[in-house]
Image (tube, rainbow, N blue to C red; front, side, top):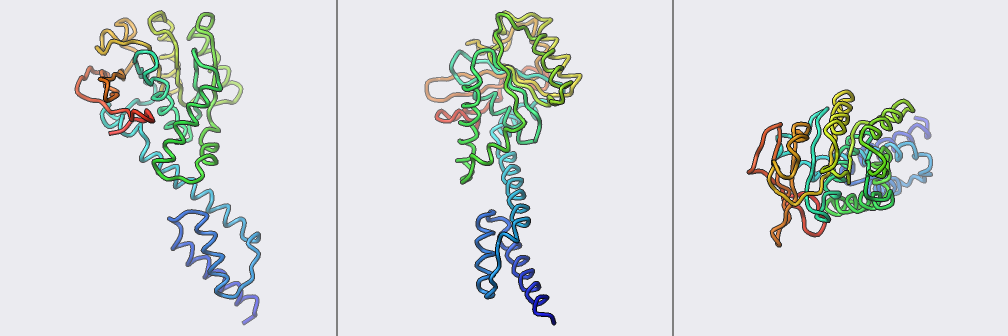
Amino acid sequence: MNPQDFRFILISNALSQETMCCIDLGFTYLKTSIQKKLNRLFLEVDLSLLSPLFSFYATLEDIMVKQDLINTSPVRFFNAVACGGLSAGQMGIITAKKGLGKTSVLVQFGIDALLYDKHLVHVSFDQKSSNVIAWYESVLAEMGKKKNIEDMNELSESIIRNRTILNFNQETFTLPKVVNTLKALKEGGVKVEALVIDGEDMDKVSVEDVESVSDFAKAEGIEVWFSGTNENAGLSKTVRPEILPFFDIVAHIGSDGKNVMLSVLKAGGKETSSAGVRLDAKTMLMCE
């Protein structure tokens, strides 16, 4: 046998054996283990020659980690008590008094969409882009901590690459104008596959304005989440009756001084009063 062929067989066996053993332990472990295996075989191999392989497994590891984040996403807890969550073309709204965590919850819904590789548009009427970015960074960091992900910063960059943030002044920019902006984005090649609208004054918005977003959601087959500032926990009081029919899910954040709860008031298009999830008081992530 040609010495070069024998060398190739040894390398191939080393790679295949180590790959099977280490695929669940992460890319860094895999690379180190392969190097040790080759050293034991007294093979001096330039690992740069194996860069395509390492690149493949680095990508594979990202996919596996993202799938794990999907499976354990805070949104899974919410969907479990909210009739499976929103479906394509539907809208939901999170209400609470000012400063109790509405934006955090909306960001969790936004991240969940991004994990599914959907292009998310986050519209904010009351926060600067830098503040919105900080929210995403904070929530992703907390999700990473829960899963003991070492290099969450790099993974976060790949997750948020499909996010677009838009800031508007609600005194001069109505929801129909937002819809027109979204249509312009689509015409420019930016797909809108999930939508978050945060900070709109839901006590002043007109029925026609909400309907314009609802029509867009149905036409595009996307999920839309709103926030609304309201201290009332009752369904008929936390969302105005005339716009309530447009929302398939309504949930309210309340606190009893010890626990912060996200109570589902309406799900699957029907009123409910027994379901809810707890929000971690420190991270504001939805949990059991």
